[in-house]
Length: 315
Image (tube, rainbow, N blue to C red; front, side, top):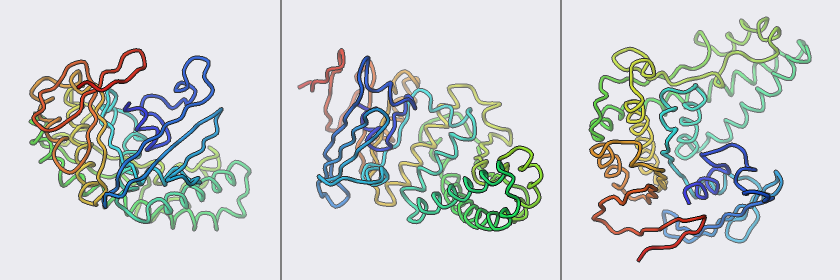
């Protein structure tokens, strides 16, 4: 169930990047359909089909050309067993975290990200082909879009950083004295200067070695990298705080996020499970929780049972 919502929202599963794994043994395609309401209580029908590497999506009966049209209507925040990699994993996890949040709260982010990605691809192609005569012009375009992308990432990272301590306290985590700092991915003040300085190395390696695509969020605990001093359980708590902070930011931007909490009870002890679930259930958002135990919920909810691929509602 959670995976289906993730696919509909992001075009991919949080469990695997291989679309073929979602079709089942011998399968060639899959389809996901849903009906939901927006912030103004307008009803929408969303659908996505993937067949042999090709996808087709519809919104309210009309074909869509870009999956981002579905994503905007179904903003999801996913917390699953590998969420600790947001703290202990490679920088790519943290860049995706930042970009997903900005996609929903920064109006010009998607176009800017696409422009930078296109410029970066063209520059890398020129580096591979030794087209040094066009690098000056490509550097100017790459630097312009890269600098703008870095600037809005800094703003968004600051919003997360300003709230993280309070969120950790709300979740009753023992993790304290944390900092979040955005590392832009290049040295010096001006990205264009960095591109010029690194050109010889870039030509040698056939790729652009500095820029927003190499950025990271430095997560510190008492001034030391969090991944180096926090246990696996503490990393999970830190990641949960970051994800729930993201949900709050989406909600404040009137985005009404859907929270997908996979196997939450196995990820935390009872005290932290209750605090994470309680915070997730606060606010105007829908929450889906999977697990092998039934949590004590006082508010209205529905319960489903999944067995051998079949889902039925428990009355």
